[in-house]
Length: 158
Image 1: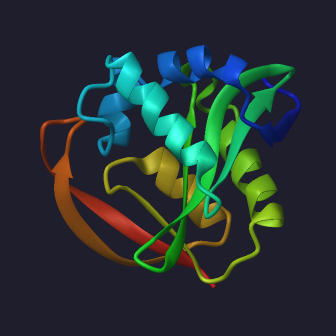
Image 2: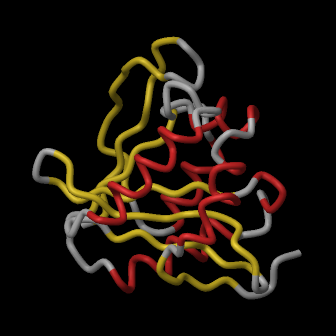
């Protein structure tokens, strides 16, 4: 059980662990909206490097009990600030995502703040609503992680 969760800037040494988390087949299916090919390491490295270099993003490694267990970020899309996160499946159900979201919300004070999750991803929706996000609607789109159209729930924190 993870006792302590903290956020810190992403380091080059984190890339290997983050790549492995984000290519886990069960995690990819749950997240749904993922990279077209989660096993493409050069594409992953380019994507993460681009995000880290973007001044409109906040990227943090989620550290649980001293080891990297995920990634959380905020980014601007179509003028709205949105958050996203990815947690190692080995620590699902231990409150890591909820604690990481709470920590990021202290750092990213832009409101309204937006989030999205596949509508059948009950765990992620629970994390977001517990953090104060309110469901404002649904949308659908092609989800590479499932190779299908998927409904996603749109949430906002005011």
